[in-house]
Image (cartoon, rainbow, N blue to C red; front, top):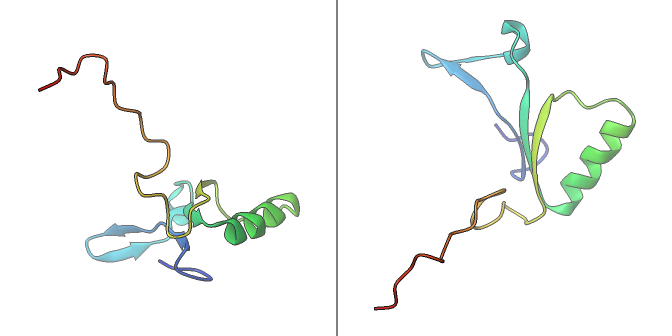
Length: 82
């Protein structure tokens, strides 16, 4: 669910086709912030203690990084040249 723009989204829990507010059922609140402007705004909100999320995935690339955040590198030590 997009918040201020498509690069700052709130993760929602859907149960039987209905969105459930996670804080109402005792679960953490998640969001995804992509791009430096959203990261800067998020940092300001954290410093001011006005961030409503418990966990935020942050990637500096606009629209997210191509391979996703925190991807494990491929082990090429066992590859055989064809």
